Length: 298
Ligand code: MG
Image 1 (spheres, rainbow, N blue to C red):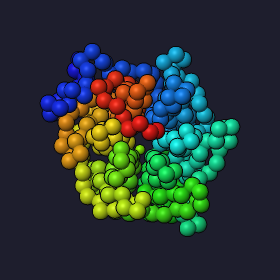
Image 2: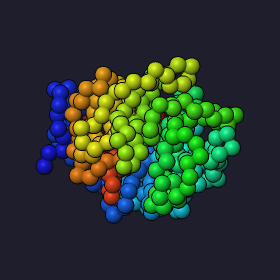
Image 3: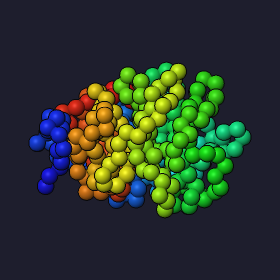
Image 4: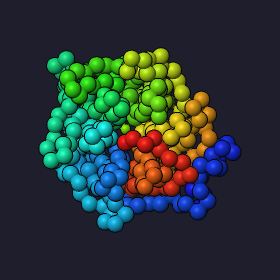
């Protein structure tokens, strides 16, 4: 079975002939939000419909990290190593403190509840960016049905002051997001409204004064859609897709694919040197070792 599909000779140097795409665990419904904890040697990820955040490690396999998770979706870590989470049902972004208590970072904008925060990143200065599409309030599967009371945007959150600002306002449904290694660019995936003709693609923005600007189209998987995205150490973009993970050059050229037998929703680099890609794929989690390293934080 082929694990990789090369579209450019450069990609042949990114993947290893003796490193398989492995299914690490299965039996979930819709997994999302992988985040690596090198200090604990484990991966956390969400099973959104089953209201659980799971923990996986090579030594212990899968265990329950948090249930109920309030239909948590995307996660990341801040520069202090704390877990930052998007919760659909409670329509908020939270931080898990070192003692386990949970701090709400954002749950409303101008007095109205957020839609259903989906994915989140933290810049090196501590600024939090998160997307707020409507998927978690469209129906009761991944959250709880409710009316939209705010636009579907990417927010910039200053955790010191709690100030919340709408910074990406030109998308139908912003979803996965990431920064380039030097934080000069932000990539955002627009997954569009369900059952619509909205564009489903990745756009790129210049980071000016700590805010994304000058948005333009970047790339679009040729199978399925881009949801979660991550940059590697050189700024190449690795995107979830319908047939696995696609690797794009900085100009948007498809370099190659990691083939996964289920639709991949999200991914993160982890392992000893951030050289292992962990992928959440519908009912299972997968990994593959690469001859690349991810952005070193988180
Ligand atoms: Mg997502």
